[in-house]
Length: 256
Ligand SMILES: C[C@@](CO)(OP(=O)(O)O)[C@H](O)COP(=O)(O)OP(=O)(O)OC[C@H]1O[C@@H](n2ccc(N)nc2=O)[C@H](O)[C@@H]1O
Ligand SMILES: Nc1ncnc2c1ncn2[C@@H]1O[C@H](COP(=O)(O)OP(=O)(O)O)[C@@H](O)[C@H]1O
Image 1 (cartoon, rainbow, N blue to C red):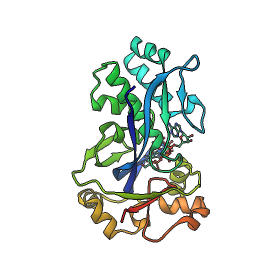
Image 2 (image 1 turned 60 degrees about the vertical axis):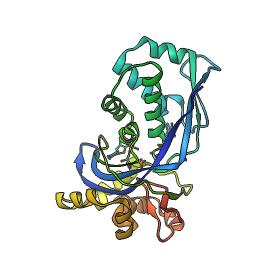
Image 3 (image 1 turned 180 degrees about the horizontal axis):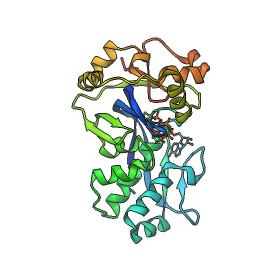
């Protein structure tokens, strides 16, 4: 069976630009991490019903892969999708840590959608897959497009390729289970200060290398301060020269 890779991402910068209902609008540079990925494949079933084989801390119904299946089923109403999942389990070799700000769950969901599109010849475009993926999570569209680097805005649905060389990152993930909504809520209550159009444009044009050379960890990521406030133990894990990815808990820097 063909093995598909679901890569991790880091947020080189992440700035809040406004609010949208319970969500926050962002401008963020996402970069794929080529050295860190989960592996997904269709494999023989061991039980009835939708089956995910792999080490997960959540129930199947909470798994982003299952949520992607539900979203795809609603979108295409394809009998062949039901037949596929009646015949095969989806097997995942998990390497991307969870609760990490590395987009592992989102990347798995995006990869699953691409796998189904390919094997069932659904003929869905990247834009269509991204729309379906957004129902699963705000980070999913980036992984559907598969760019090395992109400026991501809206709540995650606007993905614009940024042409630059992919960087090699060293990533470490402290064992602190961070809740993304909790960090966003803390940002909204304690740190809310959206950047303006001029700053957005300036950031969008900077290469990732320029960002890492010119900004500190808390300047580059608006979620770093609220994450530190909500999870004070993070302070013990922070090392000078590292940057914070998404809502955490991972830190990264250029590999040397
Ligand atoms: C912070 C980021 C940065 O890439 O990623 P992670 O650190 O989680 O990987 C994303 O904005 C997270 O994306 P993702 O984890 O897919 O979020 P979702 O499941 O869609 O949303 C979880 C919750 O986070 C909050 N949320 C999410 C995205 C966003 N732009 N604004 C928000 O306020 C909402 O409260 C939402 O209910
Ligand atoms: N396929 C999946 N891989 C990892 N975590 C998942 C997956 N599906 C659901 N989850 C749940 O999502 C949460 C963490 O999501 P994850 O994408 O790994 O982290 P983050 O949003 O910080 O990048 C946990 O509650 C975990 O149990």
